[in-house]
Amino acid sequence: MNKYTKTYNVILDNMDLFEYRLRPISAITYLQDAFARYTATKKMAAYDLFATNQIWIVAEFNVDFVGDLPFWSEEIEVSIWISEITKLKVYTDYELKCKGITFAKGNALWFVIDKETKRPAKTDVVAERFDICNELVLGEHKKFILPQATEVYTKIEHKNNLSDIDFNKHVNNKSYINLAEMTAPNEFKKTRKLKNINIRFNKETFLGDTLTCTTSRTENKNVFTHIIEKDGISVCDISTAWEEKTGKDNIVEYDLDVKSGK
Image (tube, rainbow, N blue to C red):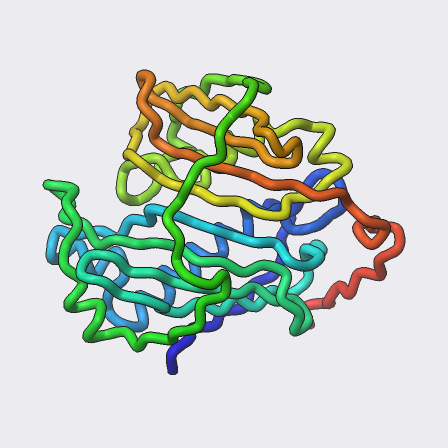
């Protein structure tokens, strides 16, 4: 089997504040969980790599939202697969579906690195244990390019706390994305929906570090950049693209299919 599939449900913590739909950044959380479960089936989960003093890190995430996001309580099907392996890089592609219809798709770039030196390890073992599925949902795996900013929209500071830290003792990827979402224009979040998000993780940060997130407009007024820095050095670069919501996004017009759990 070349693909790994896992089902989830939209729970309250993963719901947005406006239409009871899945938050886009929560879709990325499901992707990371599905990847962890997939690696566990091949004896290459994070706890397996500890024995060789190695860890998985994700360097890039690219997600296109191509359909209506699921509502609270609806079931999500996440399919993820290894689409390309080079000497040092591991690419995954993925699709997220609700009721058989794709609502998000994308790819991610992963490395196995040495825990002490932080240098990438060769992917020989990964290539031995995982099958390759050459299906590329966004076409070729392109290099991340951050759009050129034209004017600063807003800037905030955040001091990393315990809720930001993951089991690798550094700041969780979700925390960076949360910062970008916090600085995204409220008027856009109320009247528009996220169409695309591209993320590049540059450096680790840790408990107590102070981060600055600067959100800027670009020449395309529907596209924003979010640069997260520590001591003036970028640790994470994010671009977001938005589009206007339609009448279908109105929860009043939607009949929720809530299961009793029996």
